[in-house]
Length: 503
Ligand SMILES: Cc1cc2nc3c(=O)[nH]c(=O)nc-3n(C[C@H](O)[C@H](O)[C@H](O)COP(=O)(O)OP(=O)(O)OC[C@H]3O[C@@H](n4cnc5c(N)ncnc54)[C@H](O)[C@@H]3O)c2cc1C
Image 1 (cartoon, rainbow, N blue to C red):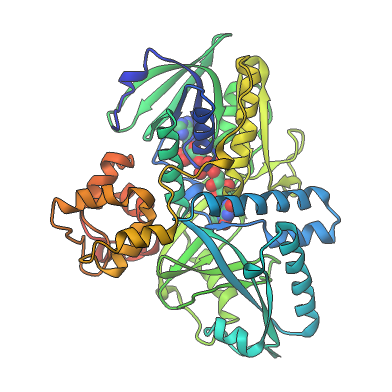
Image 2 (spheres, rainbow, N blue to C red):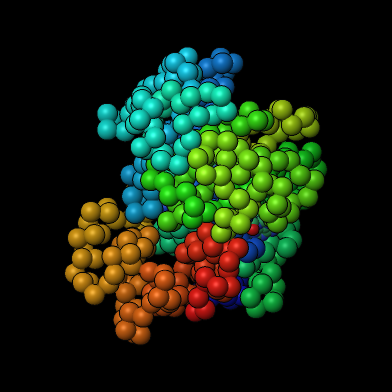
């Protein structure tokens, strides 16, 4: 299954080679394979080990961007929000086993503030064409406190006036990446993790791509007619190799922290931080996730610093009855947003776009996919693959990803009906196995071999999941399994040794 070293592909000339196995690259590989292009993808580490497993895990149009669109009469921002809201709703339909709507509440401290947010959220609903059951609502102070029991009744000298509740999408980013990878494989793409593109050359007709296999510690060469650079925040490295040009990426670091202390069922939006941003506290995998920061750094360093944790705690603590401290943090994660400068001629950070851009280098038959966000990965992939047909001089085939559920998708109601036959499984294990979608029975086939043993008494994971993941989900080491196929590595990473069982 996970044939390494590229032995079986060395004599194939692919239509497209995708570099990077995050949301963007996996989306491109899936779309290209569905449209009949011979597709190969190389990811230097594990799939989604970059920005794509470090996101706030929201499928959203971005209430903040809408505010910008209205205040600055910016039609571009408005279009961005509208497109993202359409993708949000589509992805929840296509992958209901790993994506759902989540209520998010923000407290307000005056009638004026309430009117402002209420108007904005009504507009957000109108743009999305939101159905009545998930439209935003106005809450009084009592309703706000029952939605967010952690909230203090006062913010400095201001008394809580009420709140507003709206809905956005929440998803498991790393699991969605696996789901897209499985869908791409089912459509005929060949995907490799721990396969770094170490060099590439265009000979006038095709790309010769040098790949370093990090597991076998060996190199091989693959040929492809076109190249897609989907390396997210690292995209300039390949851009600069492909053509003499200016750097466009200005990656911005964002961290999140996890805690057991706030037990919330709805999300909590801190509407305005000291530096004019927003911070989310969201229920996720039995914990509360708090984030995020937005910092430009000279080098990409994934360590989470205590000052970053303290910044997030400081912003959230202003609103809480019982403040959190650094010792309440059970896990952290950091990632870099692949933000793009508006044009190659500017280096000013205020000229950053949060949209995506597809840069086509016709004479080299290369496409760079820059920027974007998780929510819009499918749309970005469609945009990129559309351009490949011109480069390949092949008859155009229409994109099919919008009308097709992912390979393992299943409606939660159907899943819970099917899994209820396994009466001996605990309720938490049943809930947990939903992430495998339709494939859950294959997982149970592996679990059966050791009598459905749990990996540890405190957690709902079955030991058979590891073998399944090694066979079908490209898992090469325990970190792949604990950090991205499950998420306990992220949520409990600070206490890694005590809480994460050995497989
Ligand atoms: C803190 C934070 C919060 C965010 N929150 C949200 C959110 O709530 N909702 C949302 O929609 N978006 C969110 N985003 C944005 C979203 O996560 C990213 O836009 C998206 O994941 C980018 O995917 P990507 O595939 O382009 O990049 P990545 O996921 O970084 O993937 C690029 C991949 O390329 C690989 N690579 C690099 N060089 C090579 C090479 N030479 N050979 C092979 N592989 C290579 C890397 O290993 C990496 O895995 C957030 C981002 C951050 C950082």
